[in-house]
Length: 456
Image (cartoon, rainbow, N blue to C red; front, side, top):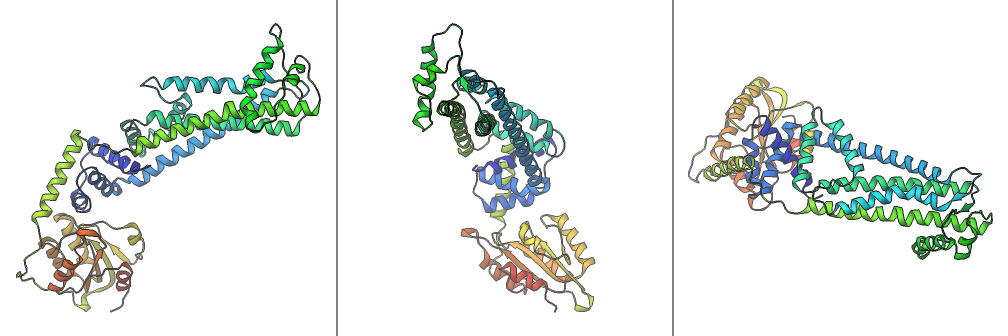
């Protein structure tokens, strides 16, 4: 569903920062400002960048897996109960099947619950069905403890904010009833294929014409769909005494299967599709920009980051830059290192690096810069790959940081993460890096990997 993961992740970060402490969001705010326009996408992008620090992907995946597992377990249980109900409705093999009684045994509870759900549409606080609420209770028992508890609360909050709670509970409710009725229908089909049944309807004081009209009314739609249903005369002679004829048995079996399919399974499938449609609408509609205290504080921090970026531009054309210097080959060790500079690693890029490459923590403030300098001094790598986002402006701060890193390594190259549109500043980076004597940046990740494995 559109933007569901973004909204869920944002709510998870909101709960963490509201209930615990603010995360170190300096780099995330800069990235969010540079990569998105103002508004909700910027808030979502910030949450996405802060997500790895909270293991958001893992906890969200755990919640999703638990919800799927619990729904499948309850669906399997509903299917088995449907099988049992279908076989129980037919009774013993040696006894005739009372068709009206068997139909009531299979459809009475599902039909009443469906009518109650339809009536609940008129109630603003309706919960979407008691089977859905039972599934929510099971899921809550599994997810209310441990690391996934906050992600589960975030998921519930998003559903409530989108007014989707009643609809996803309805989707679960109707799915479980579909599984139950499918099990009952399968039980009837298997039983009629492998056992010999005769059929009868019985009454003590009602007229026979009542059952003839009732049976014909029930079979009207199944007959239109192609089911072989009994005629009026066949219905009439089946009262109080079973007719053990192949044609009669087949017609009554078709009547019972068709009635369960048309008046049981099809309405539930229709209700399921309606609920799924409204659920999708709830999650697909455009959300307004939140105006709560937390959102206002986050927007203020993002605005501050935007003002900082707009003021801190690149140096002028007449500025003179010092040249990059490197560690002598005699002092270098046969090691490789890589470090992001005010950006984050792409998962696929980081996974491509071998274990021999020392991946340092990103530099995004003064303390992380000092820590990186200390680590590089002890490593003394022969190759240092500096990862920069091409959307960033090559300002004085970034170039000074690069110049501070190069004396601690034998050689260094800058890899520019790709960027598109108006925010692509690759040309500016090429000019500034050549101005400090560092050479052209690497624009392709395979080229960066190849350079890291070179033996100079």
